[in-house]
Each structure stands twice: as structure tokens, then as C-alpha cells.
Image (cartoon, rainbow, N blue to C red):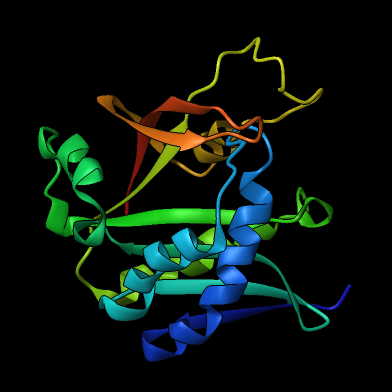
Length: 196
């Protein structure tokens, strides 16, 4: 492996969107998302990453191929459903930076890359000088879900190790088509980390 990391900001993000959409679609087909998505839908969502200020993308390359990524944006650029979930909390949305994704292909997991990328992302966000909290969201699945892989390690374990705390009572729900062709509602919970 010849792994390198690339921080991409500003207008340069536009050139990464196709690769990001492909990465997302492949990895989100896995448990726990089981998401059956489409490139054009993802690209439409990702347009915000190329247009809004203070967006951050970190790409992980292996011999030139993109094998992982971390993404984030100021929370105020998220959709109405996400904003509504936080609106009743103790946090000011203008101070929150949303960690959207931290994704790797299977061969690149459990090698410390998640810690490296999160650290780099936090450093970039702190350098902006405007944000006090990191927030992320996780999908909730029952422990006995039939498609849960043997030995599955939930992202919540990583979040707890990296000083994220569950935000009590802060939830939302999104509907998407799963890999079996059925559209279902999916409860989401939020996690927060203080940057101070």
C-alpha cells in the first residue's frame, strides 16, 4: 500500500465529487445503511460541498486510487430536517461543524486511518476559528438485525473512543430505499464533541 492523504477545500472540491459519490454509494450499500442509491442523487446532494464556505474534504489515496474519505461542513448548510433536530438543543447551530462521512473500503479499515483523518479534520476546523462543536449522526439498527455481519463493530465505539458524546433526545429519521428494494424509515441519533 502507498497511502497518502489529501486535504481539499474551496473550489477544488468540485473536481472530487464524482469520486466521492462513487465511494459513498459503494460503502453505503453495506450494513448498517444498506442504501441503494444513485449517482445523480448523490451528486445533487454533494453540490453543496462545492458551493458553501468552510467545506472540508480529506481524500485517502492508495497508488492514485481513492480508497477513503472524510467530509464535513458547517451545520447551517445541512437540510431542514437536520437543522430541526438540533434546533431544540442547547447548542447554537452557527457554532457546529458537521462531520458527514468517515469512510474506507474494507481493506483499509482498522489501520488507524480513521483516527488520522478525524484528527486532520479537527485541525482544519479549529483553524477556521468559528466552530465550537463537532456533530455527527448515526443510523440506529436493532442488535438482532438479520443482515448484521458477524463481528460487526459499530461506529459508535469509535465515536466514544474519540470523545464524542451521545446527544440525549436529539434524533431524526430519514427514509431511503434499501438494497432489497424496500423503502424504510431509519432513525438517526446525534453525537457531539467539544472543540474547546
